[in-house]
Amino acid sequence: MAGSSRTAAGRAARRPVWKEVEEDEARRVANRVRAARRARPTRRYAVVYDTSGPKVRLGILWFLAALAAIAVSPLLVALLYGTTAAVAAGQTARAWRRRRARPNEHVAMAVAGAMGLGAVLGAGGSGLALLAGTILAYAAATGDTRSKHPAVADAGWTLQCAMPPGIAAMSMVLLARLDQGSAIALLLLVSAYETGDYLVGSGARNPYEGPAAGGSAIVVITFIVSTLPISALDFGQAWAFGGAVLVLAPLGQLFASALLPTAGAPASGLRRLDSLLLAGPLWAYGVGFII
Image 1: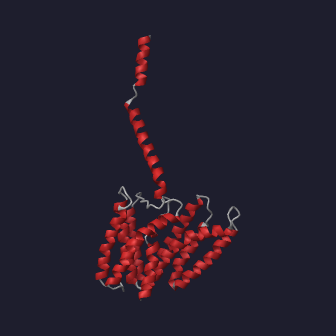
Image 2 (image 1 turned 60 degrees about the vertical axis):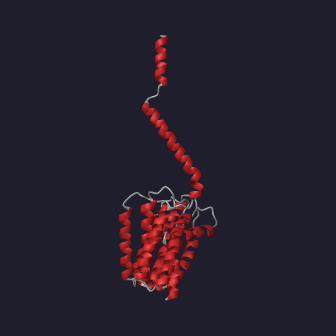
Image 3 (image 1 turned 180 degrees about the vertical axis):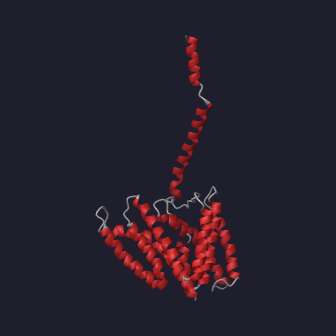
């Protein structure tokens, strides 16, 4: 009896190999989770690359659609970018509502879309859309009986979700009205940056390789824009505006993360416009000043 009990104890003490593997993998996962939690405060404004789905094909389709819209008329640019801005504003508002903020999703979509469409009439059209949207946002916040926040605060959340994508859409429409070639040049620069950033950054182990690859692509496209009669910009102006995109495109990505409650919050519409959030207004103002 004593011998059999010692044998049973020995079998119990000798763990199966599969259990050892499972425990080892669990320890590694726990270590990665703890490391991610420690790194989270410094990664609040990181760019999260969504690799699920046919992202490359969708990016090519977007580029062709935007190029065709710019080539045809500012109205098509307004429809394309205004719709995207509306989706971006709605997704941003939805992300904040999950965090118990109270932006009005539908009003945010209406304001962002109207700013893009209003730009067909000029900057004044977008301004009127924003003014009407501000009144509508406050009225909607006043009528929200479930909110525990002041109506001004809720209206502010709504406008915060709507204005950045709306301004990006407005900028592309105004640029297309001023000079189609400059709008195409900006589209080429931003698309080149996003391509290099995504292809390299999505598989990189640090946050610098993607923007560095995107910046290299911008240099190449800037050389093409500066040497060919694509836009109304001369050689020096093309390099100055290309250098602005080199700086502002990655900053726009970080700005988009700041607009969301977390960098990884789902907002594909906002990520479609993030490289234009800062570069677009500068190009629209700069080209308008030069022309």
